[in-house]
Image 1 (tube, rainbow, N blue to C red):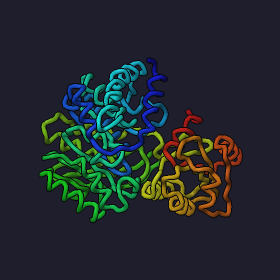
Image 2: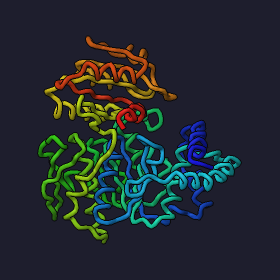
Image 3: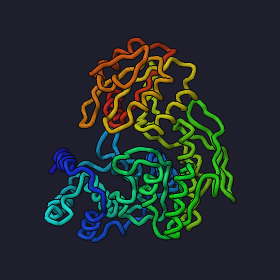
Image 4: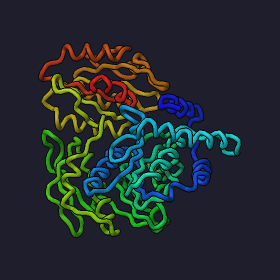
Length: 426
Protein backbone atom coordinates (compact mmCIF):
# COMPACT_ATOMS: atom_id res chain seq x y z
CA UNK A 1 0.00 0.00 0.00
CA UNK A 2 1.35 3.44 -0.90
CA UNK A 3 0.51 6.86 0.60
CA UNK A 4 -2.27 7.70 -1.86
CA UNK A 5 -3.95 4.32 -1.41
CA UNK A 6 -3.71 4.80 2.35
CA UNK A 7 -5.33 8.24 2.17
CA UNK A 8 -8.07 6.88 -0.09
CA UNK A 9 -8.88 4.14 2.42
CA UNK A 10 -8.91 6.61 5.34
CA UNK A 11 -11.30 8.92 3.50
CA UNK A 12 -13.55 5.97 2.66
CA UNK A 13 -14.40 5.93 6.39
CA UNK A 14 -16.13 9.30 5.92
CA UNK A 15 -19.36 7.56 5.00
CA UNK A 16 -19.72 6.33 8.59
CA UNK A 17 -20.11 9.97 9.72
CA UNK A 18 -19.97 11.04 13.36
CA UNK A 19 -20.73 8.25 15.82
CA UNK A 20 -20.12 9.63 19.33
CA UNK A 21 -18.80 7.20 21.91
CA UNK A 22 -15.56 5.57 22.99
CA UNK A 23 -16.43 1.88 22.65
CA UNK A 24 -14.77 1.50 19.26
CA UNK A 25 -11.64 3.28 20.47
CA UNK A 26 -11.48 1.13 23.62
CA UNK A 27 -11.82 -2.00 21.49
CA UNK A 28 -9.04 -0.93 19.11
CA UNK A 29 -6.71 0.14 21.94
CA UNK A 30 -7.14 -3.25 23.63
CA UNK A 31 -6.37 -5.07 20.39
CA UNK A 32 -3.22 -2.94 19.97
CA UNK A 33 -2.02 -3.67 23.52
CA UNK A 34 -2.97 -0.23 24.83
CA UNK A 35 -0.57 2.16 23.09
CA UNK A 36 -2.42 5.07 24.74
CA UNK A 37 -0.89 4.02 28.07
CA UNK A 38 2.66 4.21 26.69
CA UNK A 39 2.68 7.96 25.98
CA UNK A 40 2.68 11.09 28.16
CA UNK A 41 -0.12 13.28 26.84
CA UNK A 42 -1.69 16.72 27.16
CA UNK A 43 -5.28 17.09 25.96
CA UNK A 44 -6.66 20.32 24.46
CA UNK A 45 -10.34 21.01 23.77
CA UNK A 46 -12.40 24.15 23.07
CA UNK A 47 -14.29 25.93 20.31
CA UNK A 48 -11.57 28.26 19.03
CA UNK A 49 -7.86 28.47 19.78
CA UNK A 50 -7.09 24.76 20.20
CA UNK A 51 -4.60 24.62 17.35
CA UNK A 52 -2.87 27.87 18.28
CA UNK A 53 -2.61 26.89 21.96
CA UNK A 54 -1.22 23.50 20.99
CA UNK A 55 1.35 25.09 18.70
CA UNK A 56 2.49 27.60 21.33
CA UNK A 57 2.87 24.73 23.79
CA UNK A 58 4.73 22.54 21.29
CA UNK A 59 7.23 25.32 20.59
CA UNK A 60 7.68 26.05 24.28
CA UNK A 61 8.39 22.36 25.00
CA UNK A 62 10.70 21.98 22.02
CA UNK A 63 12.71 24.98 23.19
CA UNK A 64 13.26 23.08 26.44
CA UNK A 65 14.79 20.24 24.41
CA UNK A 66 11.78 17.91 24.62
CA UNK A 67 10.63 15.68 21.75
CA UNK A 68 6.95 16.45 21.13
CA UNK A 69 4.30 14.65 19.09
CA UNK A 70 1.20 16.55 17.92
CA UNK A 71 -2.21 15.38 16.71
CA UNK A 72 -4.21 18.20 15.10
CA UNK A 73 -7.12 18.75 12.73
CA UNK A 74 -7.94 19.71 10.11
CA UNK A 75 -4.82 19.88 7.97
CA UNK A 76 -3.97 22.95 5.90
CA UNK A 77 -1.60 21.76 3.21
CA UNK A 78 -1.26 17.99 3.44
CA UNK A 79 -3.06 15.24 5.34
CA UNK A 80 0.12 14.03 7.05
CA UNK A 81 0.37 17.34 8.97
CA UNK A 82 -2.21 15.96 11.38
CA UNK A 83 0.34 13.55 12.86
CA UNK A 84 3.71 15.20 13.47
CA UNK A 85 6.81 15.11 15.66
CA UNK A 86 8.49 18.42 16.51
CA UNK A 87 6.38 19.99 13.77
CA UNK A 88 7.55 17.55 11.09
CA UNK A 89 4.68 15.57 9.48
CA UNK A 90 4.73 11.79 9.45
CA UNK A 91 6.52 10.24 6.46
CA UNK A 92 4.29 8.90 3.67
CA UNK A 93 5.64 5.36 4.07
CA UNK A 94 5.01 5.32 7.82
CA UNK A 95 1.45 6.56 7.35
CA UNK A 96 0.79 3.76 4.84
CA UNK A 97 2.20 1.19 7.29
CA UNK A 98 -0.11 2.48 10.02
CA UNK A 99 -3.11 1.99 7.77
CA UNK A 100 -2.04 -1.64 7.28
CA UNK A 101 -2.02 -1.98 11.09
CA UNK A 102 -5.45 -0.41 11.60
CA UNK A 103 -7.32 -1.67 8.51
CA UNK A 104 -7.82 -5.27 9.77
CA UNK A 105 -9.13 -3.94 13.08
CA UNK A 106 -11.63 -1.71 11.28
CA UNK A 107 -12.88 -4.74 9.35
CA UNK A 108 -13.18 -6.79 12.53
CA UNK A 109 -15.07 -3.97 14.25
CA UNK A 110 -17.65 -4.09 11.49
CA UNK A 111 -18.79 -7.47 12.86
CA UNK A 112 -19.29 -6.15 16.41
CA UNK A 113 -22.29 -4.37 17.93
CA UNK A 114 -20.42 -1.04 17.61
CA UNK A 115 -19.84 -1.22 13.86
CA UNK A 116 -17.04 0.18 11.72
CA UNK A 117 -14.90 3.05 13.05
CA UNK A 118 -15.27 6.55 11.63
CA UNK A 119 -12.56 8.37 9.72
CA UNK A 120 -11.57 10.39 12.78
CA UNK A 121 -11.44 7.29 14.99
CA UNK A 122 -9.14 5.59 12.49
CA UNK A 123 -6.82 8.60 12.34
CA UNK A 124 -6.77 8.92 16.14
CA UNK A 125 -5.88 5.24 16.54
CA UNK A 126 -3.13 5.60 13.93
CA UNK A 127 -1.69 8.63 15.72
CA UNK A 128 -1.67 6.94 19.14
CA UNK A 129 0.01 3.84 17.71
CA UNK A 130 2.59 5.92 15.83
CA UNK A 131 3.51 8.03 18.85
CA UNK A 132 3.75 4.97 21.11
CA UNK A 133 6.53 3.63 18.89
CA UNK A 134 8.62 6.81 19.06
CA UNK A 135 10.93 8.08 21.86
CA UNK A 136 8.78 11.09 22.77
CA UNK A 137 8.62 13.16 25.94
CA UNK A 138 5.12 14.56 25.35
CA UNK A 139 2.26 14.11 22.90
CA UNK A 140 -0.27 16.93 22.45
CA UNK A 141 -3.77 15.91 21.35
CA UNK A 142 -6.29 18.37 19.93
CA UNK A 143 -9.86 17.15 20.42
CA UNK A 144 -11.81 16.83 17.19
CA UNK A 145 -15.44 17.49 18.12
CA UNK A 146 -16.53 18.26 21.66
CA UNK A 147 -14.49 16.26 24.11
CA UNK A 148 -16.53 13.90 26.29
CA UNK A 149 -17.29 11.45 23.48
CA UNK A 150 -14.48 12.47 21.13
CA UNK A 151 -12.14 9.65 20.08
CA UNK A 152 -9.14 11.50 21.55
CA UNK A 153 -10.70 11.17 25.00
CA UNK A 154 -9.30 7.66 25.21
CA UNK A 155 -6.02 9.16 26.48
CA UNK A 156 -5.14 9.71 30.15
CA UNK A 157 -3.34 13.07 30.09
CA UNK A 158 -1.06 14.62 32.69
CA UNK A 159 -2.76 17.95 31.98
CA UNK A 160 -5.93 19.19 30.23
CA UNK A 161 -6.55 22.56 28.59
CA UNK A 162 -9.95 23.98 27.60
CA UNK A 163 -9.72 27.11 25.45
CA UNK A 164 -12.76 29.34 24.90
CA UNK A 165 -16.29 27.98 24.50
CA UNK A 166 -18.51 29.22 21.67
CA UNK A 167 -21.59 28.19 19.73
CA UNK A 168 -20.36 25.75 17.08
CA UNK A 169 -21.43 22.25 15.95
CA UNK A 170 -24.71 22.86 17.80
CA UNK A 171 -26.46 20.02 15.96
CA UNK A 172 -24.14 17.57 17.70
CA UNK A 173 -22.91 19.27 20.87
CA UNK A 174 -26.05 21.14 21.96
CA UNK A 175 -27.68 24.52 21.39
CA UNK A 176 -26.47 26.42 24.46
CA UNK A 177 -23.16 27.49 25.98
CA UNK A 178 -23.81 25.24 28.98
CA UNK A 179 -24.42 22.11 26.91
CA UNK A 180 -21.37 22.71 24.74
CA UNK A 181 -19.27 23.41 27.85
CA UNK A 182 -20.49 20.10 29.32
CA UNK A 183 -19.15 18.25 26.27
CA UNK A 184 -15.82 20.08 26.30
CA UNK A 185 -15.42 19.57 30.06
CA UNK A 186 -15.67 15.84 29.42
CA UNK A 187 -11.90 15.76 28.90
CA UNK A 188 -11.29 16.57 32.59
CA UNK A 189 -9.85 13.49 34.29
CA UNK A 190 -9.60 12.36 37.93
CA UNK A 191 -7.11 14.54 39.87
CA UNK A 192 -5.61 15.86 36.61
CA UNK A 193 -4.99 19.63 36.49
CA UNK A 194 -7.06 21.60 34.00
CA UNK A 195 -6.44 25.11 32.65
CA UNK A 196 -9.20 27.06 30.92
CA UNK A 197 -9.42 30.26 28.93
CA UNK A 198 -13.23 30.32 29.20
CA UNK A 199 -14.62 33.56 30.62
CA UNK A 200 -18.44 33.34 30.53
CA UNK A 201 -19.91 32.70 33.98
CA UNK A 202 -22.30 30.00 32.74
CA UNK A 203 -19.46 28.16 30.99
CA UNK A 204 -17.11 28.44 33.96
CA UNK A 205 -19.84 27.11 36.24
CA UNK A 206 -20.08 23.93 34.14
CA UNK A 207 -16.31 23.48 33.89
CA UNK A 208 -15.79 24.14 37.62
CA UNK A 209 -18.53 21.65 38.49
CA UNK A 210 -16.92 18.93 36.37
CA UNK A 211 -13.48 19.68 37.84
CA UNK A 212 -14.92 19.40 41.37
CA UNK A 213 -16.52 16.05 40.49
CA UNK A 214 -13.16 14.79 39.28
CA UNK A 215 -11.18 16.35 42.17
CA UNK A 216 -9.16 18.09 39.45
CA UNK A 217 -7.29 21.32 40.28
CA UNK A 218 -8.56 24.07 37.96
CA UNK A 219 -6.81 27.26 36.89
CA UNK A 220 -8.35 30.21 35.01
CA UNK A 221 -7.02 33.46 33.62
CA UNK A 222 -6.97 35.94 36.50
CA UNK A 223 -6.91 33.15 39.08
CA UNK A 224 -3.57 31.40 39.13
CA UNK A 225 -2.08 33.38 36.27
CA UNK A 226 -2.54 36.70 34.50
CA UNK A 227 -1.77 37.92 31.00
CA UNK A 228 -2.23 41.47 29.73
CA UNK A 229 -2.10 42.57 26.11
CA UNK A 230 0.32 45.48 25.98
CA UNK A 231 0.43 46.52 22.32
CA UNK A 232 -0.05 45.39 18.74
CA UNK A 233 3.14 45.75 16.71
CA UNK A 234 3.83 45.13 13.04
CA UNK A 235 4.98 41.57 13.70
CA UNK A 236 2.37 40.52 16.24
CA UNK A 237 1.21 41.08 19.81
CA UNK A 238 3.25 41.94 22.90
CA UNK A 239 1.99 40.97 26.34
CA UNK A 240 2.88 40.37 29.96
CA UNK A 241 2.51 37.05 31.78
CA UNK A 242 2.70 36.43 35.51
CA UNK A 243 1.79 33.90 38.19
CA UNK A 244 1.78 34.17 41.96
CA UNK A 245 5.54 33.55 42.07
CA UNK A 246 6.82 34.47 38.60
CA UNK A 247 6.71 37.46 36.27
CA UNK A 248 7.98 36.97 32.72
CA UNK A 249 9.75 39.68 30.74
CA UNK A 250 7.61 41.20 27.97
CA UNK A 251 6.75 38.49 25.46
CA UNK A 252 5.79 38.97 21.80
CA UNK A 253 3.69 36.53 19.79
CA UNK A 254 3.99 36.48 15.98
CA UNK A 255 0.38 35.26 15.80
CA UNK A 256 -1.73 38.40 15.41
CA UNK A 257 -4.87 39.15 17.39
CA UNK A 258 -5.44 39.84 21.09
CA UNK A 259 -7.07 36.41 21.37
CA UNK A 260 -3.67 34.87 20.61
CA UNK A 261 -2.33 36.43 23.82
CA UNK A 262 -4.83 34.30 25.72
CA UNK A 263 -3.83 31.18 23.79
CA UNK A 264 -0.15 31.86 24.46
CA UNK A 265 -0.82 32.40 28.17
CA UNK A 266 -2.66 29.06 28.43
CA UNK A 267 0.41 27.37 26.96
CA UNK A 268 2.73 29.28 29.28
CA UNK A 269 0.77 28.29 32.36
CA UNK A 270 0.81 24.69 31.16
CA UNK A 271 4.60 24.98 31.27
CA UNK A 272 4.40 26.34 34.82
CA UNK A 273 2.25 23.38 35.91
CA UNK A 274 4.67 20.93 34.30
CA UNK A 275 7.51 22.67 36.15
CA UNK A 276 5.60 22.35 39.43
CA UNK A 277 5.03 18.65 38.66
CA UNK A 278 8.78 18.07 38.48
CA UNK A 279 9.56 18.36 34.79
CA UNK A 280 12.74 20.25 33.91
CA UNK A 281 11.62 23.66 32.65
CA UNK A 282 13.92 26.66 32.14
CA UNK A 283 11.83 29.84 32.07
CA UNK A 284 14.59 31.68 30.19
CA UNK A 285 13.49 29.86 27.03
CA UNK A 286 9.85 31.04 27.17
CA UNK A 287 10.49 34.08 24.96
CA UNK A 288 12.10 32.03 22.19
CA UNK A 289 9.32 29.45 22.40
CA UNK A 290 6.59 32.07 21.93
CA UNK A 291 8.46 34.01 19.24
CA UNK A 292 9.14 30.89 17.14
CA UNK A 293 5.47 29.89 16.94
CA UNK A 294 3.85 29.70 13.51
CA UNK A 295 0.36 28.40 12.73
CA UNK A 296 -0.87 28.56 9.11
CA UNK A 297 -4.21 30.12 8.12
CA UNK A 298 -4.54 32.02 11.40
CA UNK A 299 -4.30 35.64 10.30
CA UNK A 300 -1.48 34.55 8.01
CA UNK A 301 -0.03 37.10 5.60
CA UNK A 302 0.67 35.15 2.39
CA UNK A 303 1.45 38.11 0.12
CA UNK A 304 3.07 41.49 0.75
CA UNK A 305 2.35 43.13 -2.62
CA UNK A 306 -0.59 43.08 -2.80
CA UNK A 307 -1.30 42.51 0.89
CA UNK A 308 -3.30 39.30 1.34
CA UNK A 309 -4.36 37.73 4.66
CA UNK A 310 -5.76 34.22 5.18
CA UNK A 311 -7.83 33.39 8.25
CA UNK A 312 -10.02 30.34 8.87
CA UNK A 313 -12.63 32.05 11.05
CA UNK A 314 -15.45 29.52 10.71
CA UNK A 315 -17.79 30.46 13.56
CA UNK A 316 -19.17 33.63 15.16
CA UNK A 317 -16.61 33.88 17.95
CA UNK A 318 -13.73 33.38 15.50
CA UNK A 319 -15.22 35.98 13.17
CA UNK A 320 -15.50 38.55 15.98
CA UNK A 321 -11.85 37.99 16.89
CA UNK A 322 -10.85 38.31 13.23
CA UNK A 323 -12.69 41.61 12.80
CA UNK A 324 -11.09 43.01 15.95
CA UNK A 325 -7.65 42.03 14.64
CA UNK A 326 -8.31 43.53 11.19
CA UNK A 327 -9.36 46.84 12.76
CA UNK A 328 -6.30 46.84 15.02
CA UNK A 329 -3.78 46.16 12.23
CA UNK A 330 -5.43 47.41 9.01
CA UNK A 331 -7.80 50.19 9.98
CA UNK A 332 -6.01 52.54 7.58
CA UNK A 333 -6.55 50.22 4.60
CA UNK A 334 -9.41 49.61 2.17
CA UNK A 335 -10.55 46.10 3.10
CA UNK A 336 -11.63 43.61 0.43
CA UNK A 337 -13.08 40.32 1.68
CA UNK A 338 -13.35 37.04 -0.21
CA UNK A 339 -15.60 34.49 1.48
CA UNK A 340 -16.69 30.87 1.05
CA UNK A 341 -18.43 28.64 3.59
CA UNK A 342 -19.95 25.29 4.49
CA UNK A 343 -23.70 24.86 4.80
CA UNK A 344 -23.62 23.75 8.47
CA UNK A 345 -22.31 27.08 9.75
CA UNK A 346 -24.12 30.30 10.80
CA UNK A 347 -23.14 31.95 7.51
CA UNK A 348 -25.66 34.80 7.59
CA UNK A 349 -24.55 35.88 11.08
CA UNK A 350 -20.85 35.74 10.18
CA UNK A 351 -21.34 37.66 6.93
CA UNK A 352 -23.33 40.32 8.75
CA UNK A 353 -20.35 40.82 11.07
CA UNK A 354 -17.84 40.93 8.19
CA UNK A 355 -19.99 43.35 6.20
CA UNK A 356 -19.23 46.03 8.79
CA UNK A 357 -15.54 46.20 7.79
CA UNK A 358 -15.77 45.25 4.10
CA UNK A 359 -15.33 47.92 1.43
CA UNK A 360 -15.85 45.13 -1.12
CA UNK A 361 -17.36 41.69 -0.50
CA UNK A 362 -16.62 38.82 -2.89
CA UNK A 363 -18.56 35.58 -2.48
CA UNK A 364 -17.29 32.38 -4.02
CA UNK A 365 -17.34 28.59 -3.67
CA UNK A 366 -15.05 25.54 -3.72
CA UNK A 367 -15.26 21.83 -4.34
CA UNK A 368 -16.18 20.18 -1.04
CA UNK A 369 -19.15 17.97 0.00
CA UNK A 370 -20.83 20.54 2.29
CA UNK A 371 -19.67 23.72 0.53
CA UNK A 372 -22.35 26.33 -0.22
CA UNK A 373 -22.76 27.69 -3.72
CA UNK A 374 -21.76 31.31 -4.17
CA UNK A 375 -25.29 32.21 -5.32
CA UNK A 376 -26.73 30.63 -2.15
CA UNK A 377 -24.44 32.72 0.02
CA UNK A 378 -25.39 35.89 -1.90
CA UNK A 379 -29.04 35.41 -0.87
CA UNK A 380 -28.05 35.93 2.76
CA UNK A 381 -26.42 39.37 2.53
CA UNK A 382 -26.63 42.73 0.80
CA UNK A 383 -23.71 45.08 0.15
CA UNK A 384 -23.24 48.07 -2.13
CA UNK A 385 -20.13 46.44 -3.60
CA UNK A 386 -21.03 42.76 -3.72
CA UNK A 387 -19.47 40.38 -6.26
CA UNK A 388 -20.40 36.74 -6.82
CA UNK A 389 -17.97 34.39 -8.57
CA UNK A 390 -18.24 30.62 -8.87
CA UNK A 391 -14.55 30.15 -9.67
CA UNK A 392 -12.44 31.31 -6.72
CA UNK A 393 -9.19 31.22 -8.69
CA UNK A 394 -10.55 33.61 -11.29
CA UNK A 395 -12.00 35.79 -8.53
CA UNK A 396 -8.62 35.93 -6.81
CA UNK A 397 -6.87 37.06 -10.00
CA UNK A 398 -9.60 39.60 -10.71
CA UNK A 399 -9.23 41.12 -7.24
CA UNK A 400 -5.43 41.20 -7.36
CA UNK A 401 -5.47 43.11 -10.67
CA UNK A 402 -7.43 45.96 -9.08
CA UNK A 403 -5.51 46.21 -5.79
CA UNK A 404 -3.04 48.92 -4.86
CA UNK A 405 -0.94 49.80 -1.81
CA UNK A 406 -3.93 51.14 0.10
CA UNK A 407 -5.82 47.81 -0.17
CA UNK A 408 -5.72 44.60 1.83
CA UNK A 409 -7.47 41.39 0.79
CA UNK A 410 -8.83 39.18 3.59
CA UNK A 411 -9.73 35.64 2.51
CA UNK A 412 -11.83 33.90 5.14
CA UNK A 413 -14.69 31.50 5.86
CA UNK A 414 -14.34 27.74 5.92
CA UNK A 415 -10.97 26.42 7.05
CA UNK A 416 -11.31 23.85 4.26
CA UNK A 417 -11.61 26.71 1.78
CA UNK A 418 -8.54 28.39 3.24
CA UNK A 419 -6.66 25.11 2.94
CA UNK A 420 -7.62 24.91 -0.73
CA UNK A 421 -6.85 28.51 -1.69
CA UNK A 422 -3.59 28.58 0.28
CA UNK A 423 -2.06 26.28 -2.36
CA UNK A 424 -2.03 29.28 -4.70
CA UNK A 425 0.50 31.04 -2.46
CA UNK A 426 2.95 28.21 -1.75
